[in-house]
Length: 116
Image 1 (cartoon, rainbow, N blue to C red):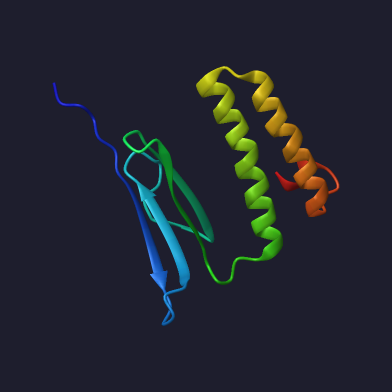
Image 2 (spheres, rainbow, N blue to C red):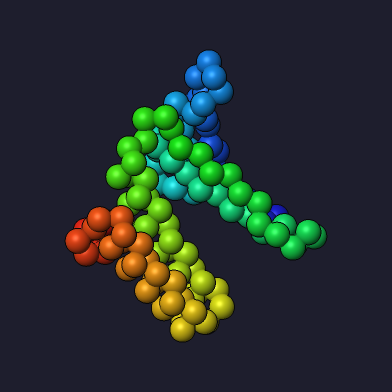
């Protein structure tokens, strides 16, 4: 029996200096008919052979600083959820969530909920 496959496509438009000015994506299993635009993306994959993370971090030149802070906060918070779900390490995930609250405070959010 053939395994089901899903495809995620990311397109990055570059300006004359090779700086991203557009990012769009589409997934075959998503409920979307058209590409979705984005201002930033973080993609990480684990290389089991070398035992390290491979990453692609991109943002468009018009991504606002305050939006980037919110994006980073939400990404860190979701990583805490992923850590807990994947490993069962609730205490370690809570430590990361505590850092997220600190990050929100340092970023100028009055409450972490304001960044969600």
